[in-house]
Length: 479
Ligand SMILES: Cc1cc2nc3c(=O)[nH]c(=O)nc-3n(C[C@H](O)[C@H](O)[C@H](O)COP(=O)(O)OP(=O)(O)OC[C@H]3O[C@@H](n4cnc5c(N)ncnc54)[C@H](O)[C@@H]3O)c2cc1C
Ligand code: SF4
Image 1 (cartoon, helix red, strand yellow):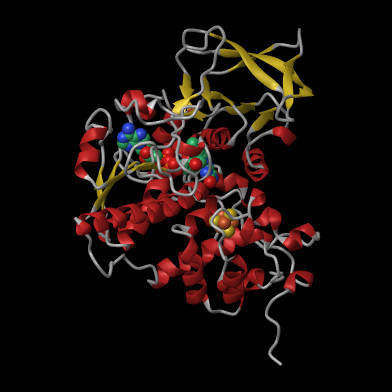
Image 2 (cartoon, rainbow, N blue to C red):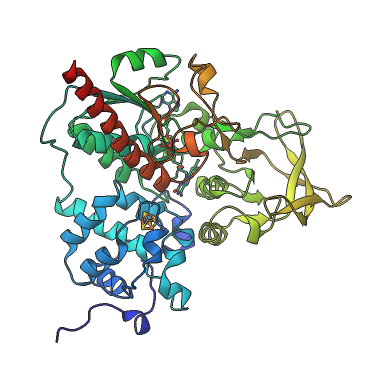
């Protein structure tokens, strides 16, 4: 009888790829985890219990066929593992790097529940597709049939790009418009290189370009080109613009110089440190933490990326103020641990009250405690009177979350229905909006969310758009 290649979780311990030491990694923007060696990937994949009801799969937004590609990896059939993996995920190597696996696939792994430590699903997914790139298994798209129909996609983030890929495979002519000078959305300019190196994103963009997707960059729709012009030019339009309006600080002095938006800070860092671009605000020090006392306000993943960027830029000190405690923060615990290892200090149960200086010099910090749960069941932070103190700061970064821009007004489209939060109202599973032939996906529909959900939306929406294009074509033929 053949030797059982799987179920090794009893004898093989969970192991992540090697993490670089904090004292080395906190000086550069390279990824912090190494790649698995082949034998290690096979060993870790072999821990999967191949359970009858794979909760990892049902908790992956893409319903990736995880047990199958783990088994193929464990048995050395890597090209087949790649084929299975890419069948449900447009960018598996990106998700493998940046999905919050502890809340999705790995957090629901059955052997994790039984106390053996989850299979390292994300790291194996990354390994499979990085190997596929090295081996030349990732091919440019050559549709079996070219169609005359075209789709205009506004926004080159993961949502727009996942749809572009699927539509191009079906032979549709695809043009992607973006206001940035590079495609990739937050993959390129939001998420820092130490989580996702930029060549990993850029090779995907090149692959799409070579596959015939046209990119129109430096094109702010609503300013450089009207939404109506795009609608007039294409048979269908997809809105995938993400959410970029920063939630603001209030309180005395909150408009001082030196108090900056997280997205501006991270974009400048990504451009200057990862692409080597000349960024005047970075060179002048306005958006650069070098030598500064930095205070970051917020407790989500954006705040984690800001504190860890500031450390790498050579800040004198980096503190993160969050109004709840560690257990109640929205950011990933794995990232908090990484940040602490790199030298970030978290000041839990604290919020800014006021800022001193025309150019900020300090923050008055209010101490908080957790009170009664609110309607959502989450404990609300309450101020502890008389416990304020002053924290020196010469760079304050606002990382309090993002809201949608008012697209109906900005684009002169009052008929484009939005929710009470300002996100676009789109049908679940298809992305259909209130305008005929106009679809929407990703953060602009969900509010600030995750890359893997944007990919899922983009793929689902491409299927719906193809139906729309096919029915339109049939109607013309019938006439
Ligand atoms: C700092 C940060 C870190 C994050 N870390 C993670 C993480 O680790 N893991 C994870 O899963 N998710 C993370 N996220 C969330 C994730 O990046 C988003 O959920 C995801 O990128 C949304 O994809 P999208 O395609 O909807 O939008 P985006 O990625 O935001 O792309 C939208 C694109 O639309 C363009 N655009 C907007 N308006 C216009 C216009 N008028 N004209 C032309 N172009 C326009 C923008 O320039 C942008 O390129 C992070 C987010 C931030 C801000
Ligand atoms: S896409 Fe994300 S959630 Fe799904 S298997 Fe990969 S890492 Fe896990």
